[in-house]
Length: 212
Image 1: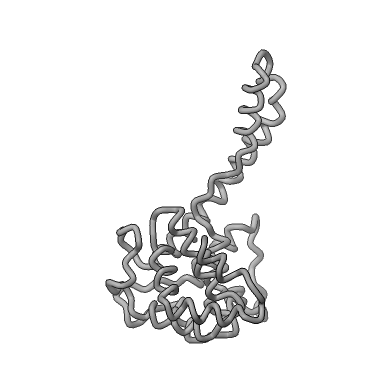
Image 2 (image 1 turned 90 degrees about the vertical axis):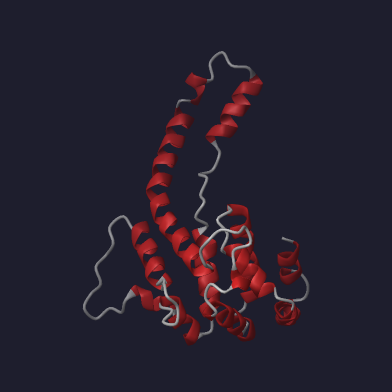
């Protein structure tokens, strides 16, 4: 959070300079190692740091990320919490988890609405403190662990400014043993968000093209 604050605070016209300075200090590596963690807090912190480094489409920082990612599962990119799996693999898992959470969130919100409606009946005979605790429990937001908004924003910033090498790399990593199509996973997530996905007309470009 401190590093993210350093990147996002201060004069806007100096943002690029701050990004380049911290990138030369290895912050892109730190961001990728954190974002590759299974630990939710570390992963979320890594995504936020990556977004701060990439904000505005800094092409030099984008290139630094690309070169690091092309190195694959090199020792210097092992997840900070020691778990297995690369940054790309963990992003894919978060997006897949996000698809599963869509249905779970709907159920959670419906149950939350039912509990609000029945609150007065359930709270009969309870103390003021108990009622307040019950109210807080009811209003607790859905505990998402996918961080899909931050994952998608990180991927978008990696590609911002039509950085074609990164766009291609996020679709496939030909030099690596295992490849991950994150553009496809992002598309599948967006389709899952639609109640009834509308089929594409023959003349309509694929929605995946909007990633460019």
